[in-house]
Length: 112
Image (cartoon, rainbow, N blue to C red):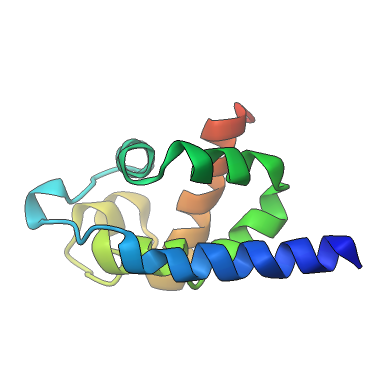
């Protein structure tokens, strides 16, 4: 039961936190997943990074889908067919954000 409550609280936190993420300007449009990781490193606080590290990858990607994942889709060019990120990865929208979230989790936890 505690795991479920923690997951729900974390999901709500990660989903509500989107209100405080900055809107990215066009000049910051990433071209690669690595560019996205660099942007997320700048956007997320130390506390948020520590919280992500405490989660397993699956819980993080599910909890972040409608918060941080939405921010990735909306601000890093995930819905724009002509964005460099979409062109270089072949992914867009809902298929792009989980890949970025997993890559960021791996970056934080040094998994490969």
